[in-house]
Image (cartoon, one colour):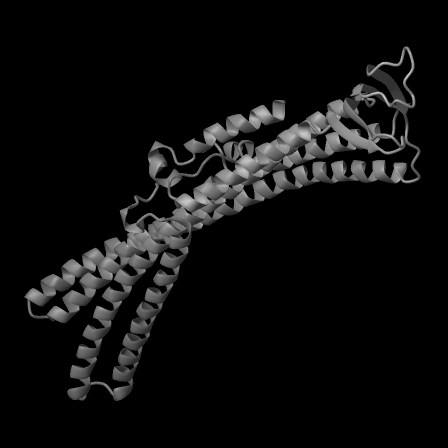
Length: 404
């Protein structure tokens, strides 16, 4: 089937999602063995169920053997055995058989796309957790620098307070800010433990030993053209189309053939010349159901198809809006990175100036240390914003089969 072949090509290309630029081998194997086994079972179950559905129009061949004992004759017991092979097979259902096969193939493809999307989302969640853990680690470094500045600020304000230059409220505010930053750092430790636990539920890899991917914004055409959600919804619509035709066909005339081969012992009561022990019976049946719910059934299947087609249109619109939102978020993050870069240049100049003034005796070493820490904070901010960008991009990559 064309849709199924398209899906297979997309699933083969799926391994390119985290291509050479994103360490494909490591990240495609990021899930634990149990997770991979569960997804493998889902794929195998879908294949088996689809094969059964595709061949469901073929009726089973019935094998039957019977043995009977009769005491109808007073002087002896009559034993008779019978073996038969029979079949009652529809060979024409006004196109229903063809549509049933096509329905099964479309259902197979749609379910396969659903499972593949689920697996990719699980991989994407694991990779997103990696980004979030690295981001929290940077946040901790940033808070450590801020805490250092808080302590330096407290020293300066305590000296000024002892010298009578400021009142106690300034010193209290500095101490309060230091406590708040300490609390934030403790909270990041709890958040990091939660992320580590979530990652451990998805992967048995050491997160510290995995390299982070370097994702770039893929084109809107590629995001829409290879989107697994859209692939799935299109196959769902095709499945509903074949189901509607199959529903319509089951109320039209159908033709079945019957055949039975029998090898049976003759009953002495009915034995006579010309009566065969081994014989064939065969025939055919033409049938057409008359059902009061026929039109309602056909209409329900038709509406389900129209609904599925509308969902494809809605999915396209959703994909466009998703891409637009991510693109706008990336623009804002890019502006934040530029501002942080400007701040870095500013703090770099201020640090050099403060250091020179400290050498001249006009500033203290505390001022120099605080300016150096502030410079490092802005450098860390840029790395944090970069990870924000990657976290946004992973949402796109997760749903696309052939992103490179």
